[in-house]
Length: 167
Image: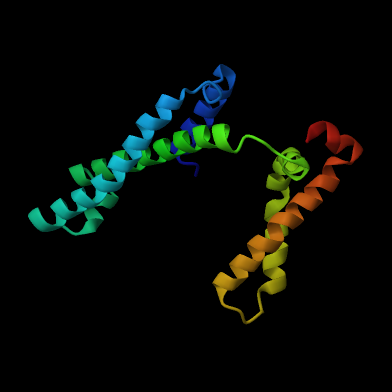
């Protein structure tokens, strides 16, 4: 099941693209949201402490239910995520807004890599399933191997006659 939050972010992303919200976002907005993010980093530990010490609750009350702790956690999470997203958009727009040949080709192949990454990941997992290696090492090796492999395969798929028009 897709969380409603993801659907709303998708719709907001479409609206942001159509209305050029992210390309025209002023720098002062990033400063405002940076303050929100910093306040949020302090707010949750304070709320946790109040809940533990004053109200003698455990932290599970923050994970759901009809109580103020769950409401604070839900608001905290959304404000923190939105603030980080907005700050990163402005930071990357101002500081990292250039790309070389490799980044340009990877950007063109990103959707195709997204489409094919699941079968590549499953194949890699099947190949390594009996290897007696700590799972975190397999994950790191997988990330270092699978991401470039997906982009290389995606680049070749995009060169196919019909795929070139679709992807």
